Length: 157
Image: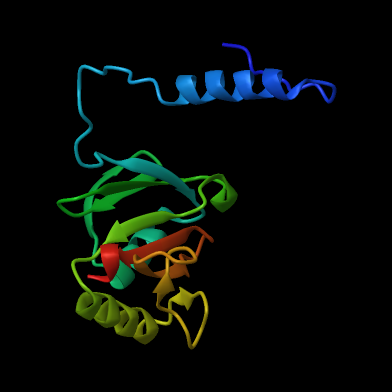
């Protein structure tokens, strides 16, 4: 479907009609014959897969699952991250968030990350809302290749 352009000379009636059609398209219910499950895996290009795997083990408690050509897969029961040798591109992924069950765990996570000298955002004020006015609370940090990660509690738990 082609994108609609609003002409500077369009009448108010034409603009309302266009907005109504756009909203209808956005709200269409598309039936998909399946439902996504837990994350199987995702891949990240890193400078040194072995060093990155060690960082994820130390900082996030993930474990080596297997090795493959030019890489290592690390993970737990919820996710696997395939770390492959390549040029890191942290700007292609704004961040990845993992949920924690409650604020007690989030505070424990913060203490652990500080102990392991993880590159935390907002030093001194690390735990905060995911967005202005959000009840979800999070911690944001970076891995050695510059990828941005978040640990969060939904609803402030």
